[in-house]
Image (cartoon, rainbow, N blue to C red; front, side):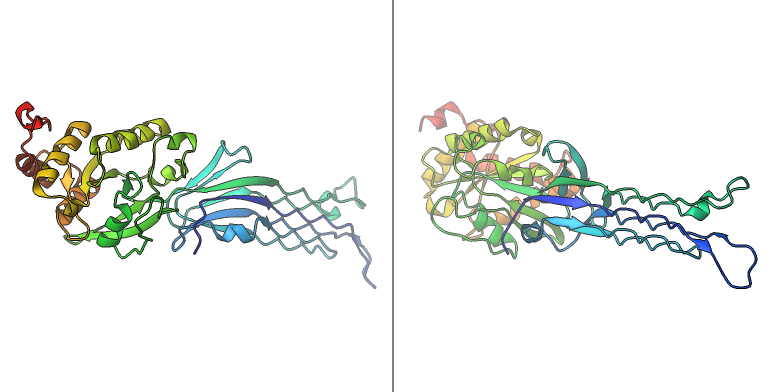
Length: 362
């Protein structure tokens, strides 16, 4: 299924039905009078968040949604039927904006959540409504009120517990495929991932959702490459997993490039908890691995995990670290802290995550 995270839609609620002008005329009945019924109410336009959708592709083929108009009133005090509502079924995490694409109407973040986008017009009163002691035979009725019409924007922000960020070919899709049942496209060239992917990871009986977005390159906030348009899909995550490929010549620079793009994008992404991991470590020998781990530690200020999705090295420890932040939080004596200490000891770093001068010179 093609991924689509933004769509422009025209909606219109139903007009109210007009009231009826009618008079009772029956044989052998002495007194007649007005008996025109009221018009029915026009249908509403609703948006509803439903489970089982993770794209707005349905709105590529249908962009116009119109609710049914109310039925006109009839004689013998018969009220017209109300018009049927129309419901836009959208994925959980969809935001709906006015036509200016900036004014938010609603944010549907829970399954079953509904919001009325356009109210149907009220039906008009029939002439029986206007009968009074001083006006025994009114010969007029109200027309129904017009419905509302507008153009809106639907914008999907996937809801996930953890988001994967990094340069192209940092191993994000490989990591997602290794720890979940997702099957993203994997290839040895940049921008293999062209749209976000979701997967459910499990560790120690706990499940959480991972979101993989296309890689960021320098200048992404200015539209370079694919740009940063998909960063919205990690705005709702509780933690970011920043993967840096061990094949990068300068892993510290690679980390800072992505970090700069996150800062330029804003929306508090840099305030989220972050776990840094050096991926694809199976391609390095021990000396080179130690050197690049120290370089990355200096850049990010913390001890990075060393992982390989191919061999499985460090994968379980990393998933548990993500789980601690997502599910448990990060208590003082959490497994994440113990893992950091163990990784620090292996890499030969001090308590602040910095390598000693004598070791860096080597």
